[in-house]
Length: 263
Ligand SMILES: Nc1ncnc2c1ncn2[C@@H]1O[C@H](COP(=O)(O)OP(=O)(O)OP(=O)(O)O)[C@@H](O)[C@H]1O
Ligand SMILES: [Mg+2]
Image (cartoon, rainbow, N blue to C red; front, side, top):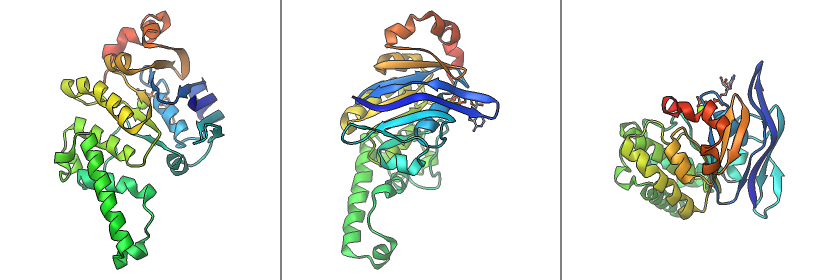
């Protein structure tokens, strides 16, 4: 059963066609990778899926809880987030002056019901909710292996841990669909090696569907159910890891230079 589909999605910026006639479908529970050289249109694809950009042409469809597909083309990012889509960013976006725990807490606002009024008065309902929010944030930090760093400043964490913290922030909004933009970028070899198991773990634990942009081929091949390959905005191939590995067009356009592209 589909959770997300793009139908002929095209994104133009002035004269540049960043993504052209994109037709992706992602089934519930899958891990799907989007790969391709720098500038291929991968991040633009995420931006269309999350409402940052409305596609110039085509549609983005998202499954509702009952399984029917809803056209979310042109809907605002916060509304799409409320429908259960969360993402991380290629260039990490954390509040550097806040602790790891505070970073997760600020991401939970989407679901906080109490208003400023009850907060100021310190009413019991607010305090109860506040306690639940704190506990949930701590448990999210535990899930990403950062419980012992809860009170460290976000910017003091090594890069790999910042990436995990960003994932905890994304999980704080209770997503069904999680989009990861180059989660391995900047990670050291050990963190990179651990990423495959980590992504599988959070998929199980939080019952997620995951779309991942990644240059690191070992991770992509190990983890993906299916892969889409973009080049200059066009989809040049899609298939299973084995199909992609042996695809001549992909080897010519991308895999032959995969080592250079690992940044
Ligand atoms: N807001 C924008 N305005 C103008 N051009 C843009 C904009 N966003 C992206 N582009 C262009 O669209 C093309 C695709 O960019 P995109 O960031 O989607 O590539 P990418 O596949 O994510 O690349 P990378 O691997 O380097 O992250 C590039 O030519 C880029 O310069
Ligand atoms: Mg990108």
